[in-house]
Image (tube, rainbow, N blue to C red; front, side):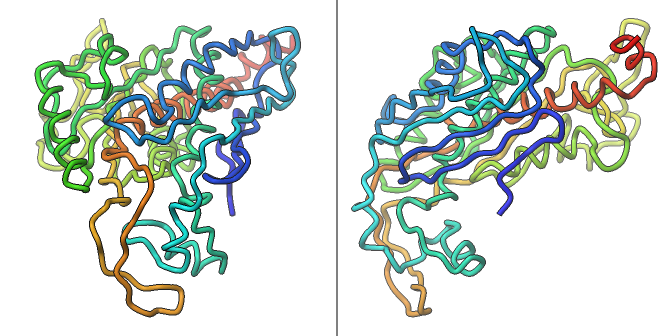
Length: 358
C-alpha cells in the first residue's frame, strides 16, 4: 500500500480512523524554516469534526504533537514527525456491519485487495486520515508564505447551488466555508435537508493559488496540472477536478479559450494558470468535486464477505456533506504540491545551481 506523496517535499501518513493515533512524517523541508505550531493547530481546527450542525458530531480535539525535526522552533532539515491521538472513537457503532460491505464505501475493494476487514469506520480509507494531510500541508504553507505564495479555498457549490462570487476573506467566518454570501443560506438549507432526511449531498471546493512563479512543473511526466489532479483525486470522496475553464473548455472555440497576452500579462485565465504542464505566473484555479457522503442512515441493499445479500443499516456520526471539511484538505494538498514543485524547480537552470554552490 502506498502511503507517501511528493518527490522533494514529501510526506507519508499513518494510522486508522479507530486506531490509537494518526499522523505523518514530512521530509525534504529546508533547515531553518520557523515552524509555527499554533498555526499548524489552527489549520487542523478548520478541518476537525464536531464544530457545528453541518458536520459530523464526532468531537475530536485533533491536538497535534511534533515528535522530531524541530529544534528551538526551527526545522533541522531532518524529517518532521507529527502525531494526532484519536480520543473519541466509538467502534461499537460498526459491530452490526462487521461482515457487511457499506454501499458507496471502499470496504468492498479494500477487502478484495488485501483480504483484511477493518470495519471500524473504514480504517485506513476513512476521511479521518486527511487530518494528517492538513498537518503536513500547514508546514508547506508556512514555507510558501515566506516566498509570498498563498493558497486559499472555499465552498463553491453544494447540491448544485453554485457561488456567483468568490470572496475568500469571508470563508473563515462561514460555518460551511462558503465563498458567496448570497447563496450560503440556500447551501446550508440543502445540507440540513439531506441530514434531516438521513441522506447526504455532494459539493465542490474551489482552490486558488496566488503568486506562484512561472516555471513550476515538468514538461512531460510530472506536469503541474497532472500532479495537482493526482493530489486532489487522492482525497477521500473526490470524483473529479477542473483546472481553469475545465470541462467548459471542451465546448469553446480556440479563439475564446486562448488567453491573450499583453505586456502587463495575460488578459484572461482560461488555462487556470498552467500551460504545457508548467505554471505561467497567473493564479492557479482548481475546482474539486466531492461525491455525497456514502455513510447515510437509509437502509440499502448490499452483500457480506460471503456474498450473501443483506440490508445495510448504518449507525454512527457522519458528515452530511464531506465537501465542507474537504475544502481544507484540498487546500493543504495544493500547498504540498506547490512546495514540492518549488524545491524541484530550483535545479532547472545551471545559473540557479551556481547561486547556491559558487
